[in-house]
Length: 191
Picture 1 (cartoon, rainbow, N blue to C red):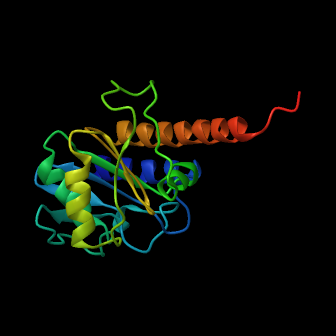
Picture 2: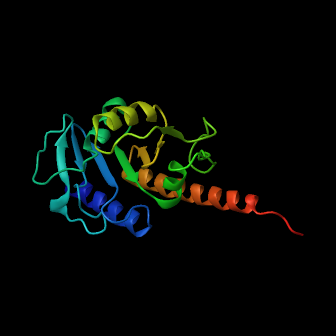
Picture 3: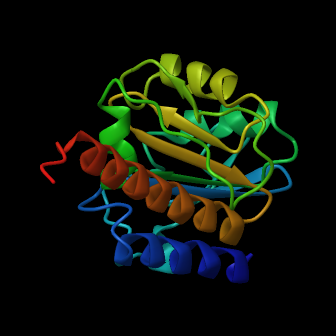
């Protein structure tokens, strides 16, 4: 388990360093059988240590010291509906979250798996930390690997933390590319 907790800390540092989360936003979890290791609430992902990571069972009962992320129920509901998912990375990355706050849909570009739908799935806003968000997110993700939370952020899921993190990076780069394209296409050509 120590190796797995070390990976959560490493991924937390990496997504913070890449600007996919800031301040005390975002959260990460990994499932190991019937136990979920999750980042704590109200603590920056930039400087976590082993004691900060909270272990919970699939019903949300805390098994260690500390207080899990306020989004713990969202993570647990996704795990319950998706036995293929063992890692969740929830970011507030600027470009992808910008799309989440706009009326523009984020296209699913080639580069990270098969394109089944032209746009990334999204759900309507629900207050963070609520049962409503947990239910909506677990239903909204369906069989997809990315979910846009309107007016909130992004969820990426995979069978491993590394893959979920790489997907979060790819989603942000995709959003950045689409944003630049939208800006360039909106400029009148004066030539």
